[in-house]
Length: 216
Image (cartoon, rainbow, N blue to C red; front, top):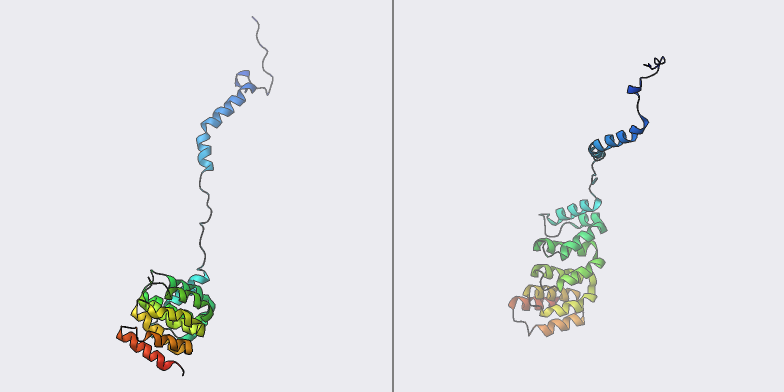
């Protein structure tokens, strides 16, 4: 019976040696077994800081100031100096309020007069639109009639004349006074023509007041 030679010093017995052809299989088994752990590891949320909106935009600050001025209890139209301080930045906010049907009528009315004060030239278009909007509250449209005359001067006369037959008496009153303040032959003629046709007493009074305001 032959015996194997004794192992050399420092060598590993054959039963403890790693077999080269087993390494790929063992690696695959480890990867398969740990795939869930790897997936969980790669899907663990990172510790990135949350996204923040930063400081309030200047526009939001202007909007807050505009609303505060419109709610000023001192009078319907806030002091001119305050609106001048805000300047053109207030125009988009006021224009949106003027045209916003869901805004309270009193706020829209104050926005109308304030917009004419802050930006007379740019206010003309939204004021004319709201004046001609039959669905807008009468007090808002009446305010727009007076403000439009301030913005456009004599150029507002044709638009105002067309509103002398408006279905809302409050609008007709405001238009009559606005035409009288603008003056001129065209305004006088329109007031004189409308006076015998008007049935509402208050509107007739406004027409007569407009005629007294017209320069001879």
